[in-house]
Image (tube, rainbow, N blue to C red; front, side):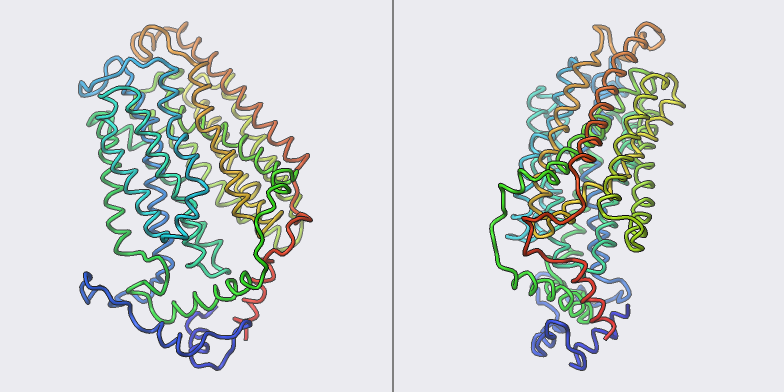
Length: 520
């Protein structure tokens, strides 16, 4: 695809788009740089024309999601030192019971649940740049005061984490809203994949770095360092990103024309489609939608349980020091990133060559991404009694979740493309519930004895054996939930457009039209 040549044809009027080329007056207007009274004039110079503004946006979203996941999981490692009998650097520790630790770890998701659906509306109303940016900024500022909230009392910390989750909840919906005005249809999968790599890399960075910070500087610095990193990202975000291509001070006129001409076809197609309220009755009673929600819930049960409690498990059953704990906790999420990236490409090839139907590939992906994690969790619960095998089985379990990336998360586009956003919001709300239920259940089962968790009892076989039996039950419950999700999806799931989803935008046909336009 030659973006420059196609755009030049549009600007010259020699080629007309399938839905009529943009008026020449608008094309001329697009060539003018936006004005700003507070930015220096040199800021508008296109110094690096080879770097497209939409790719800068995708990269900044990648870094932003790295930050929000680091801000989310840093407590999972820090709490190991916060509740230790003798924390490093003589930092204050807290005598929290296992159930209280469960409330601290799960509190984030209470706030996160609330803003899943409003986040998309706010981004549409006020601009994704400000909603996403403010979400990360406030999360970072609250992370900086997290140690002070912990010193105040337990419930002040819980309240702080709830508010952190509240502001972080707008990030993913606002990201989707920004791509709606920035990403050409044929590049949407690629740009979204770049941004969605952020959470994986954020986990891989946050776990080991948190362990190093706890050991070398003390647990409060886990929150200080990640908080300041989020603020630094926000400053760069303000200067490098704009709400729309037309508002961007450094974008080339050719790129503006290319983005807006391709998206214009999509917008006009939506306007030509009669607006109807979402058919809630059919959505909430559709077996295909229920299957998506159940699979989301069941997949996230094991995922969130390990995301919040994995460092605690490694401490209690293997007595790892905080530095090794952080490094070993990161390995499973690196495996998940590799599987998700590689298997997503395989899935696309299978669909493009029409080797299997959409329904079959969705069910295969969900079966692999739910049953394999269950199998490896069970193996870890019985045979993960040393560091090597525990890390191997946990890495295989979390890594296998990557198969679901091309399963239920994108199935909403198959069953009802017109209402995909509504279904996504509904399924994500259901899928967030395990975020606060999973850690609470895990901490209720894997309770610490009256004596400290990682003191002299680390060498006590009886204590370690007790922990292993308790975590075995936690993993068995997670495995059962995984298997239930696979069975429910295979019974109810579908890759076909549902009868009540008429009047939808056919994304494949739209992409074909865009390809024809490019070949003109």
